[in-house]
Structure formats: structure tokens, C-alpha cells
Amino acid sequence: MIPTGKAVAAGFSRLQALAGLVLCVSCASGAAAMEPSLAVTVTQTGEAFVVEVVADVPVPLAGAWLVLTDFDHMAQFIGNIKSSRVVRREENTVWVRQEGVAQYGPLSLPFKSEREIRLEPEQRIVARSLSGSMKRMNSEARLRQLTDGVQVKYHAEAVPDSALARIFGATVVRHEVEEQFREMMSEMMRRYPGQD
Image (cartoon, rainbow, N blue to C red; front, side, top):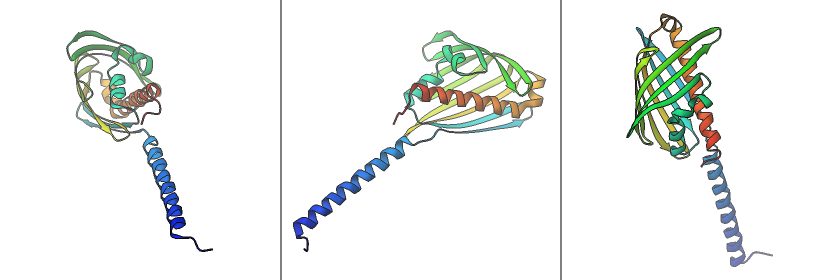
């Protein structure tokens, strides 16, 4: 039996509907399948270290922002920070005091910092060191919404106060920055699982 025009049209419509469903499912799974990624580079110029980080995380922009600015609780989700607290707050500026220990193999370097941090909500975090284990440190983090997550671009320039830190420098700095970012990304995904 040869199908009539109506039967062919109905079969074609079912095929189109099935193809549309497959396309929707593959698009949805593609959006949900964003894998977190992290790239960290550290270069040394004289006494200064320049840090560049690009982190892509499958969480909403607001969620990434809340973790990056959760200064009072950072010691709970970043392993090398032993204490972290906001000591002063004025509009979009906070002063944060932190203490911790940077560890790399048998090497252990305690650190302290007090920073002034300017917040441009869900866009930018600009920090400068006021005192602590760095002679000088300035950093900037920029956040950008992606289709299926958020991208954080971080740039820092730092001059350590310790000769030991300068000797073991770039390797230790890269290890610590990478570890901190991995822990922050994990916290973002823990707080905001399965976000599309």
C-alpha cells in the first residue's frame, strides 16, 4: 500500500517533532554540561609577581559574586586561610584582615594581610594591601556572565616581604593561587549545584 499525501505529511510532522525534541535535549544537555575550567599563570619581574587567572564556573553570576565576597566565612572554604574577617565597612568598600599559612611540600610560609577592597557589585573587585606579609599587592577581579555560567578574570601584582617567599616565589605563588581558586570554585558549585 502506498501512503497517501495525508499519511506522508503526518509521518513527516512526527519526524520533525522528534528531531525538534532531540535538538532541544541536546541543547539543554550542552548548556548543563559546562565544565569548570581554571588557567593560572605567574611570572616574576624582579621582586614582583604578576598573577593572571581565568576561571569559568557553571554557576549564576550572583552566586559567584556572593562566594568571592564572603570574606567573613572564607576560612571555612579556603584551606590556607586560618582567619578572615571584615574589620570595617563603608558603602561599597570593605577592609578585610586575613591570616593563614601557605604550604608547598615541606615549605610553610605564614602570611597576614589587611586589604582595602572596593566592590562594584557583580562586576569588579579591586583590592590593595594596607599591611601584612606583602610589601605591595594590588589586585582586580572582573566577572562576566557566560551563556551557561560565569567567567572570573583575576589580575594581581605582588611584592612579598619575605626573602624566602621571593626565592621559592613563582612556584609557591602559582600553587597557592590555583588552590584558592579551586576551593572557591568548589564552594560556588556546592552552593549553586546544577545551575543553568
